[in-house]
Length: 160
Image (tube, rainbow, N blue to C red; front, side, top):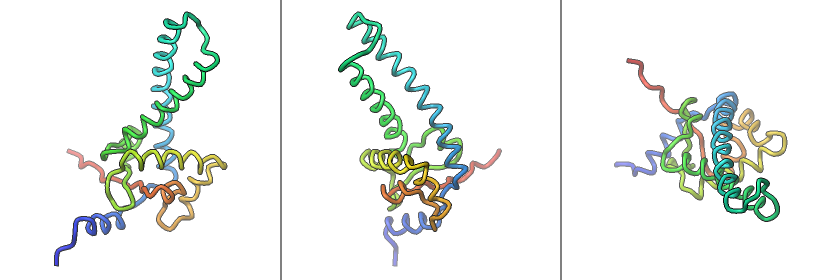
């Protein structure tokens, strides 16, 4: 009897290895450098447009709240873009990991946003949500479990 595609993906996912703590930290550090670079460009764009429109060199009052919300949206957009559709952040690509849903499918935007929010919340108490990978039987962090996502190691490319 032939198995359905979902059962096959689930079985393959159960054999996949989760990245360890050091690989996760290296991926996060790499991605944070990239996110910081994107934020510098985004902030410069906002500041330039705001200065031209308002004729002021400082962002104050409601414009400051708008600026902060804009930067949060840029961060969320970065991760949602790279985590959905089977794409990887550059840090994930460098450290050969990718994200899947618990059922083995690619993340959707709602999955990525949920994961990002839960990662922020569970990393806040001294990184406890991430340190959990050292104790978890499947090597998953709190935000992996709560968001229904799973990072997996990808195969290394053969050398020519």
